[in-house]
Image (cartoon, rainbow, N blue to C red; front, side, top):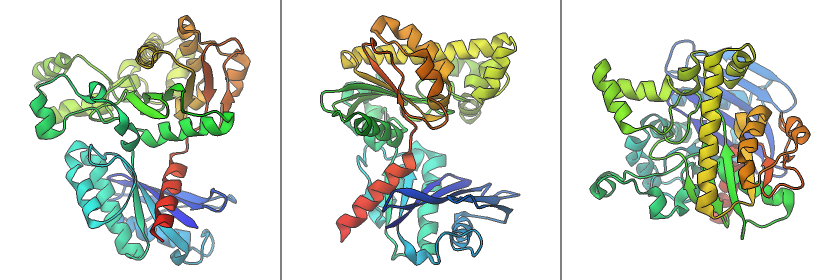
Length: 403
């Protein structure tokens, strides 16, 4: 079975084509700057063929037509016809309280995603546009499935997801914690069971998705009890350009002093804060690390804040879980920044966390495995995430159940 996985935004569309017989990626690519000048598509096959070309894409329909053409291209394609594709799986960021599991797309499901646009204006609007464009280009005959970032977090109890603002806002506007990166947290927690042969049942786990966008999740018996991102992906701890949790008065104070609109303030908090805002250098941790090595004090401060906030979240979830058996690092920083992992775990020594420095240094660039020392009271793992595979698997499962 061939499954095409789509991750669409307001001006981008990433894709991967899976052969589910052995769960291999036949090709992957991305369409960038959709609806803007100088839009382009980049494409790479599993056997190393690459293509990149600038092409006009005024909307998501144009993007899907380019994907279609690239998949079947005589030189760069991996299939003869899109008839070989059994189904399409879409990542959807915001499922709200409405969707707690992956779903086959119907008119009702699509309308439900559309109704949630106010909770994720840029993301869900792009997802709806992509689903409609996919139907238009590939036809109604190919089933489509949606996998929600928020669904894995649907097991949180009310004490974790209700905000202490007047309850009427929860009732009127669904203001609550939803959490994100659910497919990533779900993948690495399940991958741990495959690596160890152990069960999630009876296991207390903290998963750390650390990248340009980051979140930490507390998992007990395979179910989420709390997570750091909230109503939006802005909540939690400092990220590449996002501020994370703030005293709300910081927002209103800056708005008043700078005479800013809510939208301008949102732009500052989402796109100009975090590592970028503190270091003044970059949102890319590699650039900040280089600056730290060169003695830049603001870059060092940015790293100190990042690690400190991560350590506090892990400590809080340790208490929420009543202990911790396993901690997992994943995503760009979690998988590749051994210095962050070492520093964070050293600070968590009070909880019995201890990593093997050599194992920690080796576990980068796609490697997975245990990095904790033998006498550590908490097992620590590095597991590269694979959100696209989760989407492909859910899509395959739902399509098979249809037959």
